[in-house]
Image (cartoon, rainbow, N blue to C red; front, top):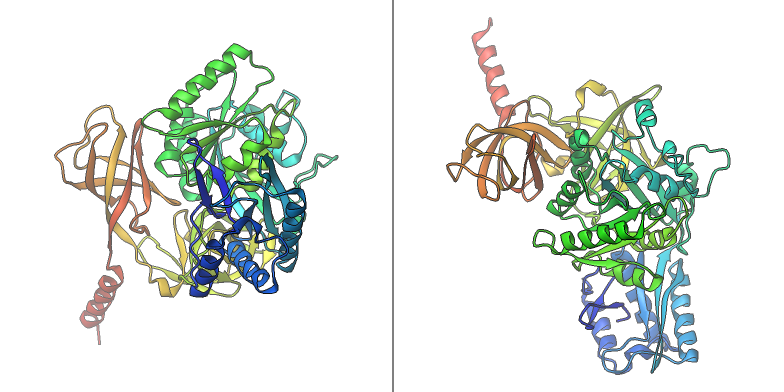
Length: 574
């Protein structure tokens, strides 16, 4: 099949589809088509003036790849398993024309990513992406982390507003949400901003001469793909907010920002460890290269490479210096152990174009799970005048439509109440439905804001959600000054849930730094909704542990209450 092909460090060739997995069509018919194409001795020539039958087969394959890639995929022309790579100029033009015709029939655009010359001729990589449709776009979430004063908010201001910084924090002013953030220059809350790309890979965000806020609706209407940046706090005292952003907002990727002049200090290692613990792919952006002496920059790069290669990270640092590096890094980013590294300047604009092109190629990691019962994690609540209670969060699975009735909970008793979705907004734009992997806001009918807290969920009745007071997890202690025993208390983060829990059972007498144990926890305040096989983070002061929930113990509160009501009615006056 014509799939994205990239060379690894040993020079071997690996074949990937857009989601970096070997293509495995679900349908038997597609399997037969794929086998027939793959067994062809002239694999690289299949796009050169194909017959009507072959064209139809290639078109079916393209539609499958676009569906699997959430609206985009990468094709590599001129590659074959049984001959030297390369096509002649005329053959490449004919192949490109065929691919363009196929893209037109799918209402998509073709963008040249990379072209190389070999002894056998030319090879080329193309990105095919659906054109912008009204209220429909692919969303990729990128969490932005790094030490305080590394330049996180400034970089986002430059990327999203299209204007360079003045070296005094002008760009970051447009992102801050609170007055004290503007005064101190430090982010204390979870901020959001978007960067839009059209079907040809061009940035949709345009600089506003009047310095006004971005028009999200205009960007979404013109975009086929939206990169949502989750701007997190770098200061140590806001660590719980950063952890909540990394767990509750379900980022696809993590962008670690390092100031070239300061180097790897403070919370940088902490944030890198957090991303690794949650299995979020990381790429690094080194800022302030314009003001940093060359010897200091080289020391920072050496230390960074050393940390990434260490046994704790086991990453392969890849320094992105030219456009050819971008395609290989982006297509192999999820499946391989590579960590792309960019060196940029927000003042001079150096290498910002490479970073934007890399972001344009990042695939979405979350699957839609359309056939599953709907589930929505709540990470923020609002009270909007004239609208009422509004909640925002991430759809984990299923499809949610306007006027759907879902279960909201668990409340303090562990119960779920039916609520009606009055309206849905996605990136400040009204839509009729949302599906798995998308972030959105819901307006709820006749629900007080005080009834809702972060960590609650909206779920379909078919999911049959149950709250739990106790759960079991496989825990690895990353750091603890002394020993952890039964009755030890700490804050547990899992998804958008955050609550204090205490240890009630352990399979060891005590655990220290580096130990692993199976631990049973009990929540202190109220029951929560948890699922097995989800990641959790366990922290208290400088103590940090990570783990996976292995088992949950649902409470039978409803049955207990009904028994209490029955006993009261039987004991009461007749």
